[in-house]
Length: 526
Image (cartoon, helix red, strand yellow):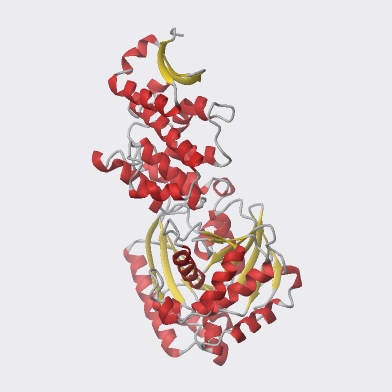
């Protein structure tokens, strides 16, 4: 079986790649839970998603390090102990799926099973003992699905996706929301450690040798990013985050300039696994292969020449979901989809976020008095959707709850700076103090003028929410605008009583923040 094939996107080379479509009732919108089982060279994982959606909620997630790929490179077979551990894990997963009443199960295996002489025997044993139909992905299909996962999280991503598993390395060029081409190489963290132990120099040589026949990939990420996928590289990113003293302890969207990433990779490749395992968030089993993973990464950064390294929490499993979505859902912004899902569980009176956004737009529209920077308009839309997200919390903790929903929420489609900007908006929307631990942390990621715009957006949304009490009607009877040196709230006579003491106080605070006076003006009824 060719594990080094380079193919263009769309090619299908493996006879066991074809899988049934996931269950989704598009007619009435009912979404059945979907289980994805990923049998990798190092780990076996079950993720149960709420349904087939642009940003499906995770209902269950469990991983067991079975080490199926250990020994495949040297002996060509799956070891009995690893097989026994994997089968025991899959029996548990099958039982859990029955208890959860999950009927749609997408189960796939990667390098270890596809390369092992007894891979077919393992697939048969899985079917016999668990009833799970395990599909074996070709290297090309594995690369494509991992790349689709990255595209799902970064729709405008440009560059190369890299997924380092225990037994293989998958690369894919991505751009314009599509997978351009794929490459699968027989170098994986477990395979390399099994072949060379603690020696790192041979790892570098093997990586360079595997890349050499694929000259078209040299510089493939130039001007773009290199997106990290896979457990070993995510653990490696944890080490980089600790070294860089990352402001937010969130893997997804963590970025490092390529030059600095290369320095860090070279440093980590020289460390002992025991010392790496002391870093928070780095499992001891992953630490064993981090020097190898770092050495491979260093060679790839030199070969691909990206401008940045970007960590993606989405990969193969999310790619399996994304691949099944109808086109209209694929086109949705993943951040907006996630905010909408969160808002559905917390809404009060059905305030359309579009109306809330339109009401503050005279201040922040492209030609408004406060010019938003590139990308901030999208975040204002997200904030409008999340306006009710913390209303049900205790009043003393609403601002903290709203801020934490953004800082720790399972959002994609944002980097750390964008997440911090949105969190500052939510803190101001709920009247939070500006010197809290979380607010100070957000400001460390932003320039002063960026942080100030976020606070102003939050204060404007706070005024709208208090004026309308979360209902749409009052916003259609009023308007907000800046005129010369005044902030003007225009109110139709029939709605004059809406402008109470609390509303005036919030209007005054917003005006003061802008360095303006304020005026409440009556407008004739239409």
